[in-house]
Structures are given as structure tokens and as C-alpha cells.
Amino acid sequence: MRVMPREHRVRALLQSAETHTREGRLVRAVRAYRRVIRLADRGDFAREVAHARLGDLHIGLQEPESAIAHLKRAIDLSGGEPEYALMLGVALLAAGRAEEAAATLYDALASPTHEPDALATLAEATDALGDRVAAGHLARRAAAFAPADPRMRRLVRDLADA
Image 1: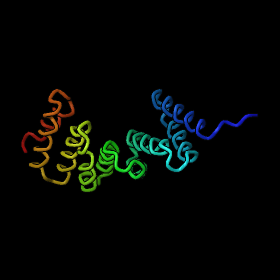
Image 2: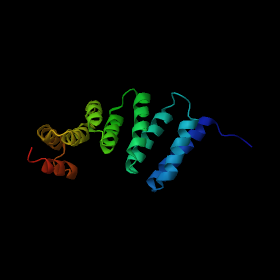
Image 3: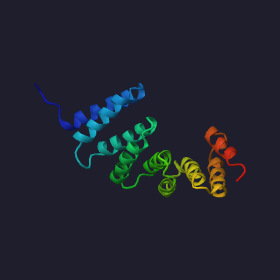
Image 4: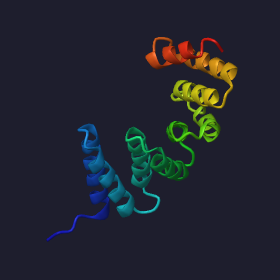
């Protein structure tokens, strides 16, 4: 019997996890990503990806505390990926930790690709902290990037009095 090299097993697990995710088998996807973390060598990009995907899955499963732990690890492994900072901000906000979310979301603003979502989420965090004027300003800045986006329109409408 031939044993598959570790890197091939890790890649196969990543593919399996992605398939499970696409097909809505989220618990199986979580198990596969956890196996990736156990198998992948330190410094292997697969560990970073697995932590980020686990964070995203836990957000979707409405388990923000689990998401936070994985996303913090993904940020550490990536050296500060702005997309992970955005995801972490979303998880922190879902966990009721608006102040931490706001601080984290500033790191997501470094990416032009993620700036609209980061601004919108920052607006939500700022509103949760009780500063509707600043939240309204942030929401309008976010909406300027994508005025037809339903999320942006809803956010601006919700903060119209600010």
C-alpha cells in the first residue's frame, strides 16, 4: 500500500472541504479544514487558508467566537491580510464586540477591493457604539463605491437621520 505524501493529502482535503462547502455540507467542510490544520506543515499556505475558511464557515454558522479565533490565526499567518481583517471585524461585530470590530476594520481599509465592505461594516460598528453621525458618514462613503448595492442602500437608509 502506497501512502500519499502529506502535501497531496492536504491538497485533497482542501478540495474536499471546498466541495462540501459548495454543496452545503458545512459540518463536513469544518471537519476537513480542521484536518488540514493538523496535517499541514508550519508555514504552509494551506494552514492560513484553512483558518480563514473556518472563520468564514463559523460566521455563516452563527458561531462568531469560533470564527474570531480562526480569523486571528489567519491574520497572524498572513502577516495582516486585509480580507481577513474584514472577516474578523464582521465576526467581532456579530459577537457584540463593536469596539474591537471597529479597530480591526481599519486594517481592512488598506485594500481598495475590500474598502466598501469595510466601510459599511465599520458604519455598523460605529452605530453599535452609539455614534450615529459618524456611522452615517461612513455609510455614505461606503455607498459611494456601490450605490446600487442593496446592502449599501439599506445601510444609508437606516442611518438617514444621522
